[in-house]
Amino acid sequence: MTWAVGQVVAPAGFSALVVLSPPLLWAALGTLLALAAAGLLRLAARLPAEAVSAPAGTRGGQRPRRNARSAPHES
Image (cartoon, rainbow, N blue to C red; front, side):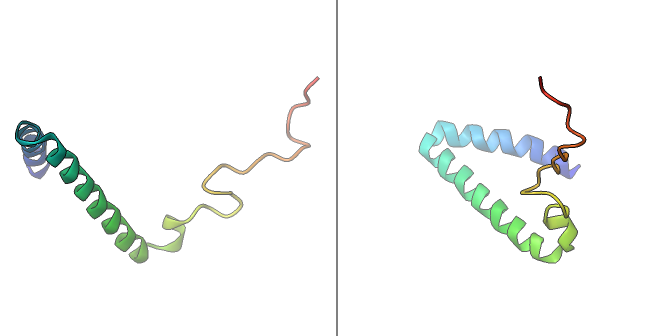
């Protein structure tokens, strides 16, 4: 039921902000984004290291590259 409340309140609230003042909508969205980012940063400190960082052997969350022997030859 909590998700349903959010699905009703968010569109209604954003619609009211657009009618009231479009810049106010952007300010509200920016504030919500900043709060979500701050919450994620606080949460990252409590999660295990393997849940926060990329797996070993990867660069920046990318999959590890195949070595030259396993890569197909280009002609």
